[in-house]
Length: 589
Image (tube, rainbow, N blue to C red; front, side, top):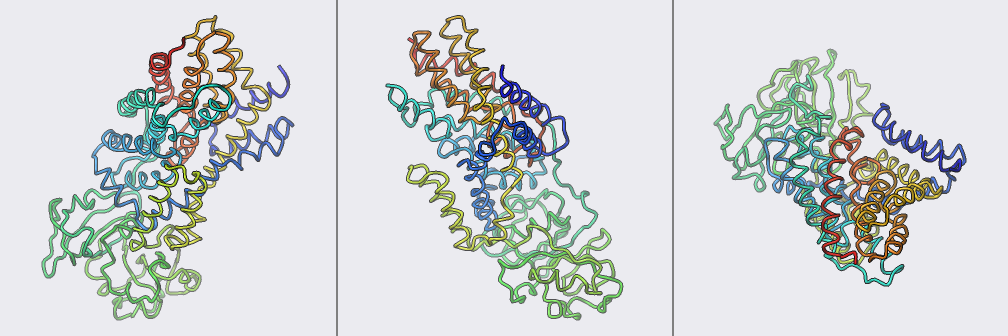
């Protein structure tokens, strides 16, 4: 065994062990492995950087912008919440999630499906008071399984189909031919996820609760005509809010103290909420609700340019003891108070009637220039902008949805590649002002991209040094001339490689091995090609093998052992189903 092969295998093993053991983030561990290989001369700088120039990586980066445009406009959040419903347990939430995701992943590449679904699922989990760690891994796995239903579901299938056409005398796969094996694999896999996730997925990131933040804001929101009008409190998703509750409903001169879940909302209703900052920010983004204070509309700042700012009233504030209205707060500071927190108690009454006290924490809707201009003002102890607090551009939601629909249609009909369509979609989001350029920059999760790029670089090292081929040949040598054993060996090795290098690299690497194995055994090659597709696409046992696994790894707070616990049994099930179905549909002889 050469120095390069031994070193590559040692570093990849160390990275695989380090991911669950070390406290460092996945991107740091993966980049550390790449750095070691570069320093030792095993991986050339050009090869290491090649992973960061990968088309799939660039596609994910651009899709973060598209997803942010949908989030900033509420383009999918409201529709997604209505589609997913309000299940009461993690198991029911998983059941509502995995089937639609699997179907969507069959119609378009599974990577963009996960990229666009993640923010929706995260917000949905928060509203349901369910840890997002119960949902993000099933989201990734469901997208992988659904990708096996059509030719365009995964890039791996497309790559292998191209090799079948160019490297053999066989015709390529039709659009739904792979579904003969993909459908039973997906069906068994979805059932397994719904059963096993209950015990296999721990609560890594707890849902927000009302006790997470000592600041309890009081905020009044008015029901606008349209979206929520006529719905009950429960239908509107305003019951059992994470970190917030409805204190009362004001309808004209009538005050309803104990608001029941079946109370129907009417336009003009004023809802008084008490909750932590994060929940108040989410309420501000709810379609059909707007701040009850008239001062917001008089700011003279476009809605899309406003931000939320926290400001703590100081003991030297000149307006102590005065009401917000008498102090002419908006005129003097250019900011409208939308919520107040005071020593954990509820502040009653309209915003304009609240008397300012030292220590009050005010939540202001204002211009971004407020923070630098008022930071040293003696009227405030502390001034800080709330992250991701720009009011949603609901008036542009239909534009964002149209851009998404156009992107999906162009990719499904193969008019444009996924990357080109995603770039066009992101440009459309920015061009039609569905989001600002600063928001687009913040939306890109660089830790995810660095982790994927580093994972691709490690895969390149395994490929270029011959370490991956050496492992494959060693396993195939044990088949003993049995065609079924040979088919199983090709699939097992492909799946194993796909969990440590990229799925496309594993498929490309194993394709000639599969051709040679079929020739040596004197059997048809198509069953081996299908086994390579399924084995490569179903990278389920580690976070580094597939892009969607890496995408949910950090946000879900997962450890590598979580993927092993849930993914290894699922991989065994996929192998069992596929190895049973493949010879029946594509005979070996």
